[in-house]
Image (cartoon, rainbow over all chains, first blue to last red; front, side, top):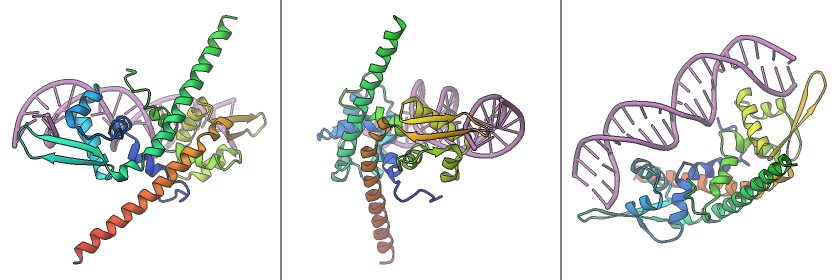
Length: 119
Length: 119
DNA sequence: CTGAATCCCGTGGGATACTG
DNA sequence: CAGTATCCCACGGGATTCAG
């Protein structure tokens, strides 16, 4: 191992971001408002409880997300982005912009192909 | 599907970048010089032929990487970054920087913990 | 409400051998 | 040299059930 050129550490960053639901979780938390477990669930209708907790735990582990437990019945837990997690904001923004452009590009290409077929 | 808020398209970008070896492949190709198949293999000592071809095919599919075949014996194939692929450069750079910082941060934390233990 | 525990499956990726 | 073709396995992720 450790053969990665030091100049190539995006993998590290990717590890923190990758996971089927992490991006969208981060997206919602980056809105700023702390969200309860079930609020997140509602925002991600297709996620299972299991995956939501797993991903949140991982993000918490890396101090990207903060978990606050209010000791009361019924339980209340709030998740929010940490200050450190905020540092991801610009890179997610960049990724987002590229993503949008990429989608547009693909779409244009598709239309061109369909154009050809009707020729 | 299609429930992703339009404002959250980093997934698209991530798809183009993610894959065990894609980042490092891109890193090498972004150096600018076209590389032959076996040159890439030598640069990624642990990758299998299979995975190298698979990842290159995927990158080619998205027009991030260009594949040029020189019809000769023995065969010669060169891979290079496309102009479009170059547009990934800034986001990889950003990811890289964050990755480095993240590693440093983790290291510092680890040292702090070890410090505590010796108290 | 916020989880943890099980069980299960598809697929990304590895090892190895073969080919024009 | 630059790949395919097979076979195989680990693991990320899903469905479902139980619990404080």
